[in-house]
Amino acid sequence: MHYALKPLFAAGMFAMAGATAHAATEISWWHSMQGALGERVNNLADQFNKSQSEYKVTPVFKGSYDEAMAAAIAAYRAGNAPHILQVFEVGTATMMYSKGAIVPVTEVMKTAGEKFDPSVYVPAVAGYYTSPKGDMVSFPFNSSTTVFYYNKDMFAKAGLDPNKAPSTWQEVLSAAAKLKASGEKCAYTTGWQSWVHLESFSAWHNVEFATKNNGFGGLDARLSFNSPLHVKHIENLSNWAKQGYFTYAGRKNEPEAKFYSGECAMLTSSSSAYANINKNAKFKFAVSTLPYYSEVQGAPQNTIIGGASLWVMSGKKTDEYKAVAKFFKFLSQTEVQAKWHQETGYLPITTAAYEQTKQSGFYEKSPGPQVAVQQMIVKTTAKSRGIRLGSFVQIRTIVDEELEQVWNGKKTAKEALDTAVQRGNDLLVRFEKTNK
Image (cartoon, rainbow, N blue to C red; front, side, top):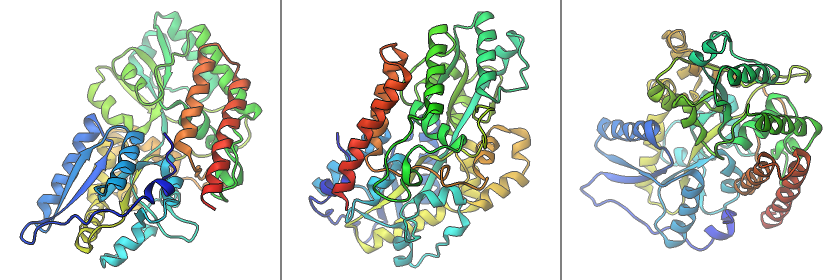
């Protein structure tokens, strides 16, 4: 499915759906949070609803991020889209260029008379969702980054130091070999292979993923993740798969279950996996920074954000936008943000929430969530700020398809990455023509 929202959303305006005069103004929030995270989303809405009687937020689970985005397109055309839509970070450029379909958060807050200061948000997060004009277009909500998890019990059994995580990919290989020798069938697996091994990998090593500052510099950006460094890394993983050190277990977060069930010893995935791992793991585990290649100058730099933000859809009534603004103000409260960060492993989106968490002594007791923050609070470069590309949802699918060809032994790393770049660039050319 093609997610270029501009032509799809142009089909019409939303139906005006309002609340009755005597009832609370109700707004719908479509999201993609499951398990422990879904419970926390419901708790947030419940907490807001109980804090006042004028407005009511109704959260609705709409499947995975790409499924929710597809559902929103259909709902827009049918005139019954939600007030708030959670969109993953790779959909940012597509949403920004869907003129007429969304209302920038800055505008929503201003119209509702709510004070809104973008400077209170963590710069690496706020910058990602800010337009070239300096306006925040969506509301940062669940921002995550890539981290490394390992099973301390398995490390000890394999004769590895359970209190020392591998910091380089060379050390991951050494640990994998020892884990396999100790009888472990799955030494290392990864969630979100494109995000971890190409997107974050690029920023972490301060090399470009795409030209034009990874798309922030214009719609004429083109993919460039087939450099010798990228090829070498994917080639290494391919060799590890053949040796039984790396186990491929799915494109999204499916591999996380292989880690918290005790099947796999090491995992790279989202910092947001912390909530489910902490809830389900029956063993001691630790969180560490994403591995890097020690010979690459400037590495490690910083990882980039994943997760999602909240977009406000157009065509709603004034009182409904007021409800949205009140809800966003509630979500920005320091106490709310600090608790969300501590319970989920997502980044605190405000500096105040991070400071409060740090001062509370939380990181001494639970050091895991701080790893994500430490990877993100360094000054970014033009190559590490993030990635903003049109049709990025489909580009990720292309990357997944090509990487699977590598893991299956049907293509070399270079063949797969060259093809992924070519196929992805065809989409970028189309997106540029459509949105000029």
